[in-house]
View 1 (cartoon, one colour):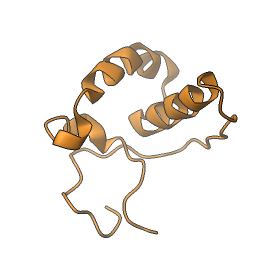
View 2 (cartoon, one colour; view 1 turned 90 degrees about the vertical axis):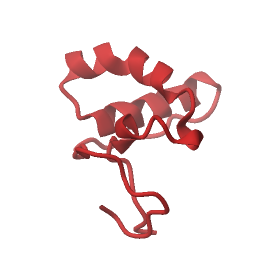
View 3 (cartoon, helix red, strand yellow; view 1 turned 90 degrees about the horizontal axis):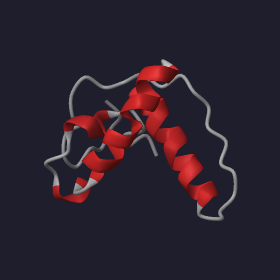
View 4 (cartoon, helix red, strand yellow; view 1 turned 120 degrees about the vertical axis):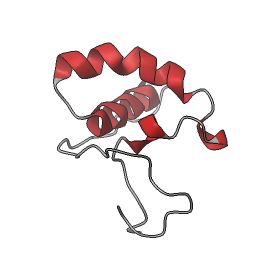
Length: 81
């Protein structure tokens, strides 16, 4: 839909109501992110895929190569940043 995307900006959006509690998940991923050398955006996408699989869902393929945002996305994003 070209309305945003996985760019790791959630790291800068923790004060937003819809992201309540996300800091706990990001804290768990810090070591993985540091060790893997992946962008935060890729680390979060892979973690989401693994969570679906761990919960009994299908294996969701994740391509890597996302570029990290350096700030939060604007509220009510209508176009990609």
